[in-house]
Image 1 (spheres, each protein chain N blue to C red):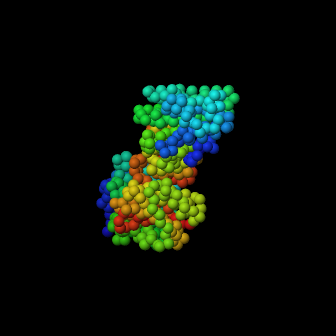
Image 2: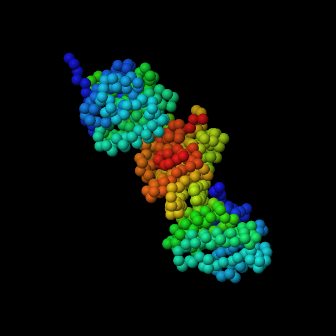
Image 3: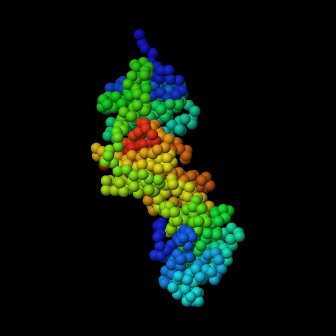
Length: 314
Length: 277
């Protein structure tokens, strides 16, 4: 009895679908991708393929002249610019796709996740579920067990709501909601150590003097400037919310930790600053930039006011 | 080369320097102007003092200048009531005023002086809101003129009669500043080929920065380059002002190219898709 394959299940071009396809051979990948692409072309959707050599070659061989109908067929690696920059570029591309008024489907093979700085991409995979929920897009992410360590495969299944059931996409049993996932991979929010240096500031200029004073000698020039820019943005937000800000700094496990706290209305959204800013000049970019410049960050999950920490590896 | 620095004293200045000196009742302008002019007099510069009041009163205000009588008698020191120099009843005409200034500086050299040094209390010009755009344009033009003329200029503004929100952007059109509230953090200079933003800018001074770039927008007629090499810090809030300025300029056929962008500043500016080189 043959099983009817439904490459996108019940997805009909409305809303965001996000699947992690885990495979161990080129044949498996091709068997998943080819019908996915063909269905997209049949539905006259925009089809984008950012994948490894095997999948791309198979599509060229199998699609014949239809390969020209793909909106994009490129090596996945060509697209990686680091976590924040890649998501920002991805976001800008999405705006262009959205403007066409047609749904689209994407094959994405994040080969860069196997590199030391690529692992952070799993966080953005998780964030897309929340920030792109309304986009008319099916995103099929390929994860090769020959390339990725088990914990990356585990991360993929935790950050993608869908996985492949053999004939259609099915819910991923390991999936966790975006906020919970981010909390699980960001540094734990522990009490501020007694050795921390803490100052209260009421203006950005005063904050920069404090930051340079506290960072002086603890960081080289470039790192210090990155710290100044990033922490200044947190202070600016805190001043807007509360009129004053508490800046603290300490070292922990080889990292400089900077905390900015205020007594304002309070913001505990763990995804804040993960979502790319829009091109609208008024949209917030400060926390996005701060996260981008730091090696890691975390938002205090509860309590009065807001407190955010940035981590810089030395 | 455009510079920015804050001043504690009105001395140590020379040709090309454009000083904004904010004063108040406790620390009035005339004694400051006297020290400023005395330094120029010792260097053989022709001196000019401009303020509200009649000549006799203004002469009296400069009594602290050693050798004042001799300088007045020889013509090295000139005292001019503000009302006689600027037609305060009307809006200031920046370009014609600048031309007068430039000719005076050139004439000073012809007369054997080493340059022209002018201290002017311009508070009265800043009182009328209708005249602010003209005053901004004037200050920008003075700054540009000083880059090529053998002149030193100190503009005094009474911080108790000119609101801080007006005074701060005016001060930012001067490379040397004595701010009355300690908040002078940046300056803008507009030359014939390139404008420069100097110092540090952040969200706290974003409104001032917007005022300053409104003046630049009025003054620049074609494509322009904005040099950020002398900018020690900028944040997202100030980048937003630069992006708005750039967008407005582009819409009016005057694209802005940013040069001298330091690495940390680049990280901010890149979020606004500006033309960075």
